[in-house]
Image (cartoon, rainbow, N blue to C red; front, side):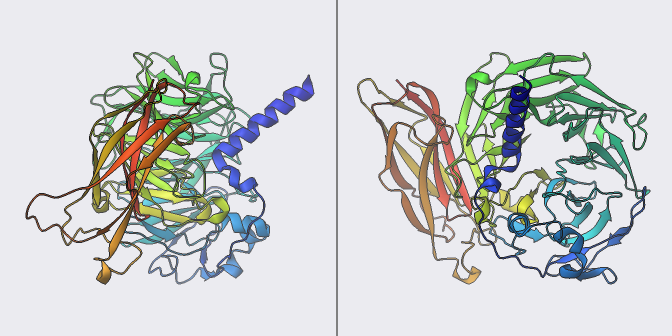
Length: 585
C-alpha cells in the first residue's frame, strides 16, 4: 500500500514537471553549438543587502560596466561547472540577438540566465530574475540596455536548472516581490534601501508559483505542490521566518494535484498611470486553477470579502486548465496546457467552448497555451511550445499569433516563452527561458497586421450520417499600410521590401486536443499565395485573394459542436485566423 502511495505521488510529480518544463528535455540527447563569448555581471552581497551594479553602453549582450565585466569563461565558472554538457545544450541558448518585423530580442548579459518571471516598474523598466545565477536584472527600454544587476543574497547552489522564479510583482510602495522554488519562499526586495528579506512558506516543498496583491497591499499566492492558497501580510512578516503567512487548505474541498497561476478578478482594482491602485470599482475576488492528472481540473474563485470559494469543474472538457482571466462580462478564459486549445466558461450557466490555435510553427505537436491575461477586449496568452505570443479578439473572433524568431531544435524548435507582461505603453514583453533572452513586441507593431480574413459564413455544418460535407469561402485582404508602417518580409532587406511574401493556409479545430481535424478530411482550393508587399494606391476597391475550404466526414467522425480555426500564416512572422463554429451532425 505504501509503495503504491509513493508510486502515485511520483507519477503526479512527473506529470507536473512535464507540464511546466516540457517533454523535450527528457528526450534523447541532441547537440547544439554553444557560443561562449557572452558577458557576465557579478555583484558582491552580504546576508541582508545587495551590491548593485550599474551597467551602460551594452554591445553584444546590451550591457557593459567599467569595473566588473569580464569574459564569461572566467566569471561564469560557478555556473558552468555545475552544468553537464547536455545541460549547457538545453539551457544556455545560442547568444544570438534575433529579430523579426514584430519581435525584438535581447540576450541577457549573464550566461545560462534562464529567465522566467518578469514585471515592469512605474518608470517602465523591465525586471527579470535568474534562478540559476541568483540575479535580478533591470532593462531600460528607452536605450534597449540592461542597466542594473542585483545579486540575491545567500543564493542556494544551482542545481540542473536552478530555481524557478515564476513571478515578480511590484507593490504599491514600489518594492519588488518574487517567488523562489528552491528555498520554498517569497522574497521582498526593498528598492530604496537596496536590501532583501525572505519569508518561508508554511508547507514544506510547497513551491510558490504565482502571486497577486489585494487592495490592502496584502499578497496572495498559489503553490505547485502545497495544495493551499497562501496569504502574506507585509506588516506582520519577519525575515527568515513563517510569521505573517497563513494558508487555506484546499484539498478538503477540491480533489486535485497542483495549482495554476493566480489572477485578480476583472475590475479588482483600477490603476493610474504609475500602476498605483485606486479604490473605485473594486471587485474583491481572485481566481486560480486546480489541476488533476492526466486530465481534469477546476477554475476556483475566492471572494476576499466573504472568505468563500466558488468552484467550477472542467473535468468534462478533458482539459488541463492553467491560468484564469476574467473579462468585463464575467466570462472566464483558461488554457489547456496539455493541448493546443484554449477555452471559455460562462460561470452563470456552466457553458464551455473550446478553441484551437493555428498549427504549431515548430516541430511540436501541441502549442501548449500557458499564461493568459485579459486586456481591451482580447485574451492574450503565450504558446509554450508553439513559440508565439498570441491574442484572441473576442468580438471579432480573430486570433493573431506573433511568432518568436529564436528556435531551439532540442525543444522542438521552441524557445520556451514561459511568461509575458505589458509595459506602461502597451508593448508586450516576454522571457525565453532556455534561450536566455528578453523579447518585446513594441506597441507600434502590434496593430501592423499585413492581412485580414473574412469568411462567407460563420458556421460550417457537416452531416456525417448522410456523408455530406460543407464548403466555405475565405477572403484574404492585404491591409493598406502606409510607407512608414509597411510590413516588410523579415527575411529580406528593407530595400527589397517589394519582393513577394508567402501566405500559407491552415485549418485546425477543437475536435482534437492537437487541433487536428480528427476523422475529417479538409482541402483548400488554394493553400499557398504569393503577394507583393507594396502599399495600396487607394484607387478602386481592394480585391481579396479567395480560397475555398471543403470539409468532409469520414467513417469515424464524431458528432458534436466544435470550433474551426481558419488560418493564414504570413511568412513565418505572424498568423491571422478567423474562428467559426463547426457543427457535426
